[in-house]
Length: 262
Ligand code: BTN
Image 1: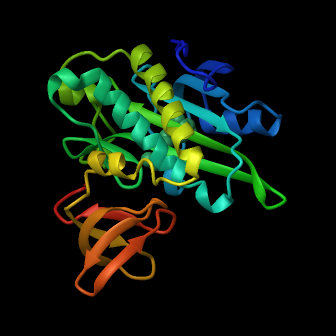
Image 2: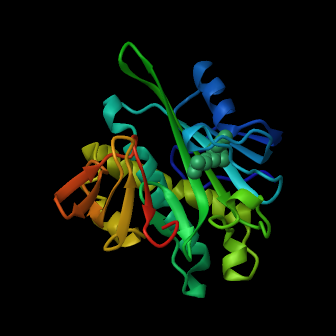
């Protein structure tokens, strides 16, 4: 099923759809290497080699979820690129809420960029960057949303869910996918005004599943515990620990709630 992306100014004006593909991120990177324009979108009904963060795979059953990627060519310092993942997470949270708001359920963001409903993950985002002469050549932001799934592989079933499994009625992928790009475009344009999250920080905080909760920070240099307080304008997680406040960057670590996945 091809999504129609109409209500945007620049995202998805060129779009490529595949019924089955290895990975939309991989295809988007190929198109970017071949010179495709800023905002080009790749969507697929299913992926055979969906890529997740930290070298993991992303379960991408045909027809069960949304699998899509966008190519971006921002004039941005390379060290600011990871913030686009948080921008994308805000877009997904807002778009899902727009579709399910009648259910009284809120899709929260587990820092930095997982979307969770009732404590389980419904969306993952994979941002990949290529540089040329020390500058950003392109960034691919890939978004995977579990929409219809009722079953998950054993190893992830304790932490994965789908929108329909949580709200108990049908959700149309063809409505949700374009809405995600509309919201993404709005948040991206705001982000680019300041090239940081200063104008979005407060809204991100309201969407945060972690704020005010105890977290374990799985830092390769040493695990520690604390209470998440929000994010900085650079997207770092602010964690109060018994030894003072620490700022956590998304590249190095992952965060787990003390009592579960969030
Ligand atoms: C994560 O590990 O949480 C990130 C998962 C990202 C999955 C999406 S699905 C669409 C796009 N294409 C890929 O191969 N991966 C991303």
